[in-house]
Image (cartoon, rainbow, N blue to C red; front, side, top):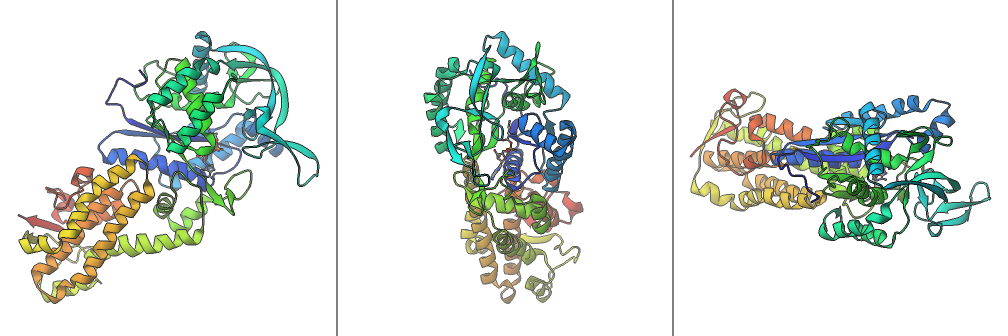
Length: 536
Ligand code: ME8
């Protein structure tokens, strides 16, 4: 009932669309890298994939920042939105669209969804009193707020217990969404789809929250107070609530504004930070249920990056500038650090030193080093080549069509390493089913570690030509197979590696990630100048 009927649809992955109240920080890049990883991972598995990211430009928060800066809201949006777009470029993100909620098709889509909800009887007008938090763009029930003393002014103020942000008593006419009518259907849906919210801890929280919820959701604001948004269709005295507007972006990009037939829908996964689960796992499915549209397959929530012990956040100002980091490390090394370091479940703290260290020890020390061992002229294998008079083309350090025989002894000696290598794809597929990126990279680096060790112990140049050749061959195979698997994680390093080995672009999908895969380099790869050719 909730699934799309087309099986051929592209894998559709999204990031949150980010507020344009300040420039991006490392946390935003983390969600974006995860989405990019999942897109590329699905492509590696042979599936078409589509990735969406963008900016959330309406709402009180943006309106207030613009006012303070003495700018028109749209001008502020243009200015900040472009920094998010540039970050995606700098970080080598392969998003297919960068959506802005000020895009014309999005306005149409948001109004269309509103109209459907209204026609189906889910929207009514009422009076609303409550504690509104501009910073979080949401109302909080009384028991989720508390009075505290402001540290700077010494005056009392009321804040949200959850986020610590100031709330204000707000009383006004709003349109409401009958989410209360959908409570049972939501709970049924969670029950039937235990992986809908991942990780499990977050799923349990969502279920508990929906089970105890009772009030309807205010989905508009008076335009007199707040006009920087999309007007309610047929009543311009009200503006659509920014979260209803924002969530619709996922439908907009799927083509909802122009057609009722949206083959790319539903999304396969919405990547979100754990701060916005309620909106994605409760409100969003409720809107879609009400509109009779299929629900997304998964909400994947990641924990937060911390800085000096508290959540890295624009409003706190304790942020890491992702542009600086990309400059310092390079895009792949930043991705590596984010993916290897952060588990979904727990917050983790950022440190530049540890990012630099991991680049040195893992990327340069193990992955890069293994490539040097097979391809660099400086490495002792070159001596071996000379000693045994093997043909060495000297062309970009590559061995020209080195011909080897597959012999028993060759397989015996390297059996453990080859076995580990061949077990790797299945292991990583399993890890990726849980989006366990630290686990996946750990498995990959275990093989790289073993291969480096094997090189050190093999000292083939002291023995015979066949050993030299087989050692180089096995190590080259580790480089090739690992690079294929690493493409979604390290798109630049891996492609450089595969190019260097001379692996044809058609031979880089997961089925070639196997020791001695048939025609692994492609018969006309690199004009026949691939590293190694095998005769069986
Ligand atoms: O919430 N660690 O936008 P936003 C990891 N516009 N990720 C972090 C992070 C941190 N410290 N801080 C932020 C919004 N993020 C809405 C979304 S979607 C329809 C609308 C990431 O600019 C994380 O993904 O506040 C978080 O959910 C998101 O940025 C919040 O971005």
